[in-house]
Length: 362
Image (cartoon, rainbow, N blue to C red; front, side, top):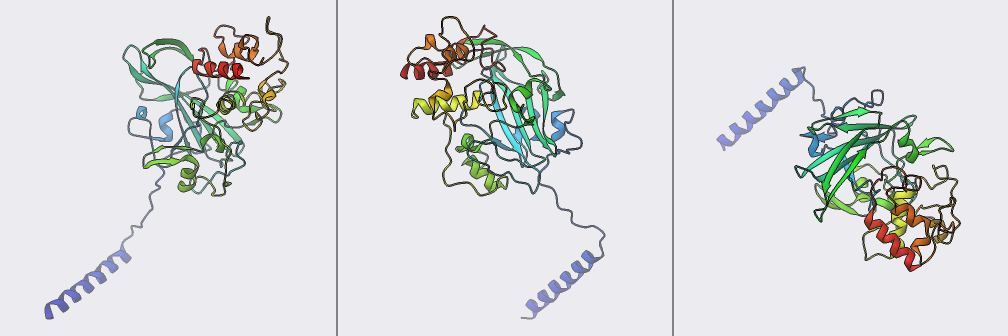
């Protein structure tokens, strides 16, 4: 009994001493910001990609820092078979808002979208090679672009506004070697061609729409629906509708041919064929929410341009050889007619096969 009381008194004495020390010390607890990213809107774009601290460890490993969340549209924009990794980051205490199924999330000021372009099985070393990283940063005045070109050592990417070209050879899953002159965009002109709405000079992102990311991907803590993940992390207001009408993976043969075609057109064509877009004068509208009407995709529609032998019809049902749309997706050589006009020099074989099946089914 005496022993226990002595222990009790000693503990009380120790606590009093600790409290006294705590009240006398000049050091104060300073909370550590768990988000290491640096994106000062008065200083961006930074001269080097590493200046933002988006990634931990070796830059080329693309291991996202805390607060840098990956995202991935269910069908992606085709860019000469380049692979892509996408991430979103937002400042502390900010959230995006849902607008509707088919519009880009209303991201807060300070948000950054990160898009990395790379190839696997690059020859002759059969290695992974990152080519470029594109950022979109939302300032008070609106979105700006920042283009970073990776060095050959894959240790850093430097800011540029000029277009660059380098030859890339890679091996596909069938061990076929492809070689292209990979060209990055001229920021002050070519980025605007896809991202700007010329009727009101608004710049906006493209792929981060509820309809495009309403499915699960793998995160460090396991698979989760991307919209749910954004809400869980505090990046998105929890006010989504019960059902979101969503695009599908264009290669998912369990989905209808029509849904797959509409999904492919939405991500690859809508940004130009939209009111205020570069092709606003054409009669085609490829947004997923509009293509329930097949004429919006050119079916039986009069073409806005002439191509000899095609009867000026965009899509002739059942006949790919009389469908200008098919020719424009198929050609690799006709720079006047190649579609899309940016980011593609190679034919997207899987998409062409899809479009051929669709036209023949009409």
